Image 1 (spheres, chains in turn orange, brown):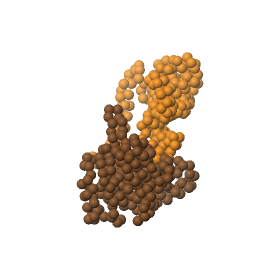
Image 2 (cartoon, chains in turn red, yellow):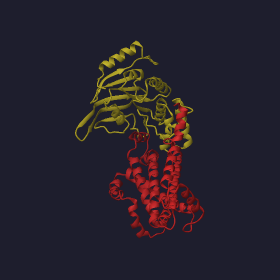
Image 3 (cartoon, one colour):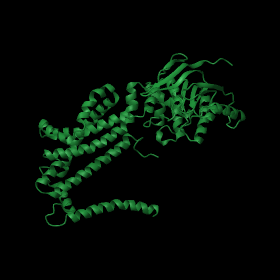
Image 4 (cartoon, chains in turn blue, yellow):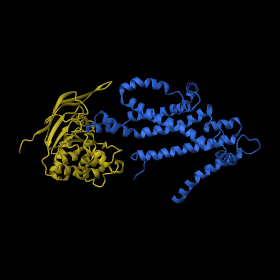
Length: 259
Length: 251
């Protein structure tokens, strides 16, 4: 194969894999009373819930509710997570003080917090935001911390001989050098937070995509479930693409492919 | 010839690292002076402690015993130019951002420090690359930035730790010519560390040959050859061979 053919082949492959997925899906969805909706039924259900409200809201509104919870929690997770990560990585005494507690709480899966958080905060907006916060806070702390720990000592030495004092060493050298690691943490945090919001909504919510999935389960509406699952996947892909663009803007020296 | 002022004096400097299971004596009773505006080369085999010696001069490490004196008071951090072997450029800063770093840390206003940075970028021949990122530059160009950044600290003492060690042979020759040009245009006291005998003879006014660990000064050579030097010149080769014979071959 010449290189043009190879290129065409690479464009063909994803189309083929998606076609196989769709074909397989149609095949298993055959027959009366199948518990799997056909792709066509799923698409129709998707269009339907975009205009006909469920629980007083159309799909875009449910989507926005979920997204809003993630974004609010995310702002807190980023600010506090970077703060704690920098504290742990920068100050030996703070590390000695705070690390044991963090290490004990860290391995608890965020979803395990849901019952307790609902008991504490009721069933309003707050518990969902808190769950998402727990889920996205931890990866940001860990990445910030390890980013600071693994910084090239040569850059620190260069900063020192150029006359940086301790504060400048942090703001001018350490933080910029750690930005890629922090962004990687934010990326992990975003997928973890998105997972948490769906889980939290499945347990207690009146709106949101997680709620829609449970509603589908309760009414045996498999097309609704699958439509929501696909929407969740697509939104999460979109968020990750936006984040990649953001990385290129914030860290052109690391992420953008110049020359 | 007028007696030249001593810029730096090292007196009986020793350095021992105390590791968990053993102690490593790296420097042993090192005594020498660096004269004003001279190009002094510290030549020694790999791992012989040259970098440690430079780090002690730059105050990045403390000697175990001995004293180091400077003409006047000890320069504080930021008042010594240091060029690192692996460039140590800040990858998130452009060329000019790297070169102006010292002045920025000192709180010099943007316009003044930019003007000064441009001056040194011109000195190393990188005009036109001010807003490039280090990753867009070749190895030789990166080290030009490193040199400009060290020069921009306006220190009269420059410490260079195998600055051309990571470059390919061709670029290395170019940079050797370049550093002499820069130094002749803008005289500073240079302490240049290398493990390359030809480089030492090509560049140095004076060469201190170091023995392998623990390192001590084995011999001093005054390189009394006119510049620009030729690496195929007879006197050059004689001196080179003499030094090679005296070098510890445990590289």
